[in-house]
Image (cartoon, one colour):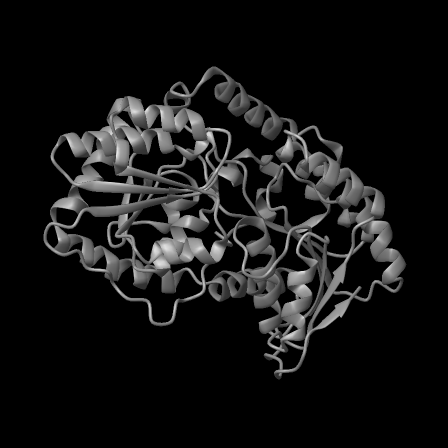
Length: 429
């Protein structure tokens, strides 16, 4: 198939949306499809360096697109306080400008389909249905929501932010751009059943569930055994946002330490909750049991993983969870809530996905028990570590992209081509 792929955020070696955009483009090309990716300038130099390396498939082309006025808008906004809002409107304006740009660059529109990949959420629409080509959306998340009883434990402003997010999700039913995109779509790929459920029922026949976020198998990944007397080192990695649930993790850590377990938590990430979480850690008398690293380069983050024994990610509504995957790929058992994407990734062979039912105190108690399990039995932890490596192999990018395009080809009556020979990819400025 000849595919036009829209990935506003796309970059090699990145996490989050940029990593999703990059890996979907790369794995789709590796399947043998002729892929042209239109992306923004955000990671342009990194993309060009990867192209120059000669490692990419020959059937992968990048078209870098960003109007000058939009670059100015983005850069000014990112210097202010409202970075998330800046990215939202930058992406929205980029999507609005994209169809006319595509028609100008590719007037024949000789593609079999157009695939919108990032931003991958139902709250970020695309206008590519205007091109008149079969439209694929996703993988999309965003329909997940934290349980009401856990949202009550947030600060008033954060509860308001969660309420606004839910309102925004509900309002997509009346957003003409989103509704036009959903109506135009031939296939809508969603990451979780929760996201499927928030879409209008008449769209369900063209919805496919596919987690759509994977990990590259780590060559030479090895288990890190604890010696007698060593503390259990646990990592939390991610933006310090209220819905990431670290406040629950700190409560669980304090309880486990009061029960006699020597557990140390490494927090990697920054965000608006930093001071509040540090104050909470002080109130819980955690002191040096928590190491705060702030935001660090991805290469340094991956090195930090190598010194850990487990991952703690108690997110209230994560549709994916790159930190979960990165932990699994390094043989680290993962403790998470049985919500959203992490609930799909984690089972009792590779970690603990604890129930989010009941009161906040009950949820914290379950997280505490999971920490104590790993701290008290190194044999159990090593068994889960082996399970983590096995599970990582089952959650590869190639698996999810292959499944998606097999489904797309079947629904559109198209064929899957052979894999390409190794030549250089191309970059169109």
